Length: 171
Image (tube, rainbow, N blue to C red; front, side, top):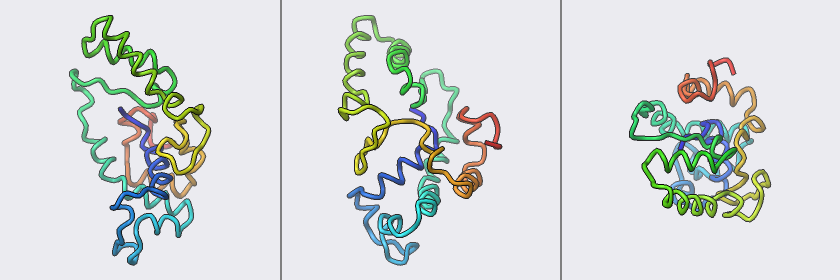
């Protein structure tokens, strides 16, 4: 599953504001003894998103290094799956050789795993302090300032082009 790295940043930022995970709540020297979460809560959203970009650098490196030409692996974009889950899941199950009966059963499980089935709300209805905060792709457009956008570009280079989210780096 591939997700727009910009949305990875936004999702991570909001999640890390409330998570109970130890790593986010342990004091860190780079934040003058504050935890990552305390740091995020003490700065503007813009500064928090920049910090989240830094936290995501290892994820971006992995996305850049991935072999997208491996025929044994079918990559799917979150955004496409969000817009047409039935088609994408059916293609996935067919790719991996499921027979028709297995596809039918697997599709029932996929339906039970949809955002709306899991959260009991439509995508786009924001629930803070939830790992399934909104579900809607493209939230970066609402939260990335010019400064965050520029920093993201500096850190990720042509990653969005590699992942076919953008045609060039001038977005």
